[in-house]
Amino acid sequence: MLGGCASNQNLRTEHESQPVPVDAGPTSEKTDKLWQVYERYVGVPYEYGGTSADGFDCSGFITTAFREGLDQHLPRTTSQMLRHGKVVAPSEIQPGDLVFFRISGKEQHAGIYMGGNHFMHASTSIGVTLSELDGYYWKDRFTQARRFD
Image (cartoon, rainbow, N blue to C red; front, side, top):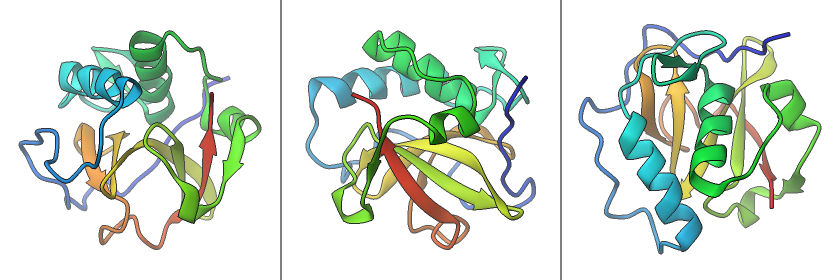
């Protein structure tokens, strides 16, 4: 069974060119490795069920980033991820935590929080990208965070 991710296909609030943001906050070995994965895949198109450089869905990108960058294996789908990991209060979110969003009435999109209000994810409209947690589209859709140590 595949778990998909959803976001507004037509709303483009992210930037075309997306280097690592200067205000991403302090880095660690964990975030450095995740940024390396992001730089390798930024711009890869969205593909429902995708788990490779040919295309990613949101959970496919997350599992690939954790596997390649951190040698850590996470559950494959967003719904499985929501059943695992440690719940993190919004005020306690740290780089490397997963952030989840409610779209069309259910939690079906996720990304990796990277500090400085930014998260990386596979957007249905532009593929692997970087967005702001309190950005226009995302701020009212954020629901929870989970930590996988």
